[in-house]
Amino acid sequence: MRDSIQSAKRIVIKVGTSTLVYPNGNINLGAINQLAFVLTDLRNQGKEVILVSSGAIGVGLNKLKLNSRPQTIPEQQAVAAVGQAALMDIYNQRFMTYGQQVGQVLLTRDVVVFPESRQNVTNTFNSLLKLSVIPIVNENDTVAIDELDHLTKFGDNDLLSAIVTEVTAADLLIMLSDIDGFYTANPVKDPSATLHSQISEISDEIMAQAGGSGTKFGTGGMRSKLNAAKRILANHKQMVLANGHDPLIICGILKGHDIGTWFNANN
Ligand code: ADP
Image 1 (cartoon, rainbow, N blue to C red):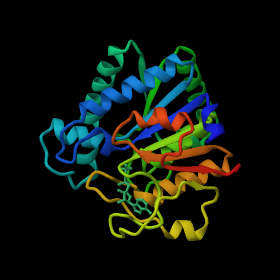
Image 2: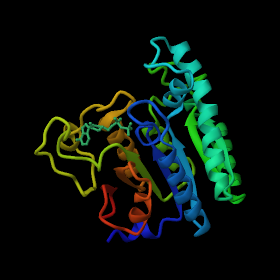
Image 3: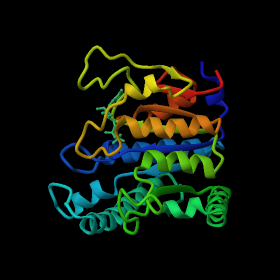
Image 4: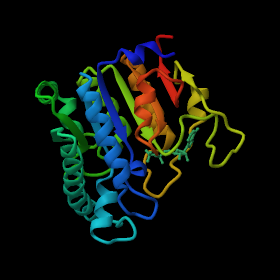
């Protein structure tokens, strides 16, 4: 049993586009509804919950009836602008079904780099949580410039979720992906790969087992998840990487069940 997970009070949950959007591009309302149900229930138990959600571009493509991601950055940012508003609209509707208020927090990297604005971000999260609101966080895609611009852009929501865990001093990050956890090799390419149940250090050997993204919507792949885990471990926090296909999995994770890969330096 993973005891320290069961006692986690402040929890960051990151969902990837693969949880929110079907492979055919349509929005997975069932998954979003389950997510709203589970997170509201956690809130009702007295836990403090923060959701980091990807999906703005995936939902934007759906809304604009586009089949593929546009090539240029301004076009991608336009799609994200449409998608982010639509995604928040869906979240708001679903969470309100359970009587749970949500708030949108859009971040760029510079605000967490500079101590003063970083403190403002922390204060905002604390105020939202005090008001029993579930903050829904994303990178501010419409103004963050491009992958090479390390000042404004986080690059991927895996890193963003690790940084949100840091600035909110959360106890645990649950990262939901399209795969059951971190394997000894990419199972899509190597069927003999086995799941790591627990990892206490991101060694070079572990890093070498990570491959890129497996899907058209996925961005970071396993390398970016391990980089996020590295940051989490360096800050003496813990992270569980698990499959977000059914968001009810969050309940099992928080009961300390052996689900996904548990990144924890303390054991
Ligand atoms: P998400 O969109 O959920 O963030 P990504 O597509 O970015 O997900 O990353 C998950 C994908 O990483 C998996 O579907 C898998 O194809 C790939 N992958 C590469 N190496 C590994 C590994 N060692 N263990 C598990 N998955 C891996």
